[in-house]
Length: 381
Image (cartoon, rainbow, N blue to C red; front, side):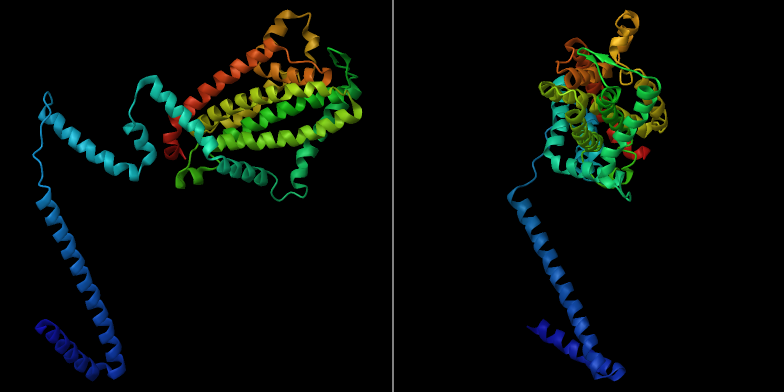
């Protein structure tokens, strides 16, 4: 009680002194501010006293146990274990990506398989974020254009017109498939769409990390979403182009509705292949920026080595060249589309099986390399 009375006497004395210097109004405001600051300081002192009291009670209830030394461990090893135990607790808050791989327990191939499945499961768990990235890439591709998404239909039609004039009109090419001769424009259109899906997936997938460098450095997210979003946006373009192809086939023929049942298998094989190469190229492009420039030349050569402009029947009598052509994993996919939509026949299972095996190997290698190097992406961007 005496302390409170002394505190108020001191406050009144301070108010009289400030009134003589500042005037009554300003002195009242200054005194109120000082009293507020004193009240805050007193509250903080009480909180500190309560924390100290609780610590004393905790040590009184549970006294510290003497540390037991593990038999067979040297004092130097005990020191290292104590240091690294503290590092493991404090560092993950700041550098989560770097510590996860260093501190996670390794249990051989089984542990690696579990982590790979967890990374792949993130594509399903974060499917909404994956769709947002794919939609963002679709909008940025046609941002500022007059036609917008209409280019999805116009670009394949313009390519079709150019190649039809060159090969169909000027050179008079008449491709032959299992059911006979076909219109070159329709034949070209059937092979051109899956190749465009393949090329767009690789080009956008290779730049998936570099073009999103700001997001990679500032936002913590599963990085495997970015190449997958590039493939997903290319798949959406491919689906829209298939609508145009179906209209062309319904108007000009041939009309083989029974061949549509084989399209899901062909699309699945192509998605796996595109994802594997997209992951591999995205990781390589972070370390070697020349990948984007070399990729255009490689895709151009790959395009002319794939039976898009010519039917595979031209090489029936040339077994050596036919064997080399079938080593191309895209041959089985493109020929499968041609057989399904132009002839109504199932794919050639040998060539498609080879393409599926290559696609699976590319996916395993590409995704493994992406997982191995993704923790270092920030230092290269």
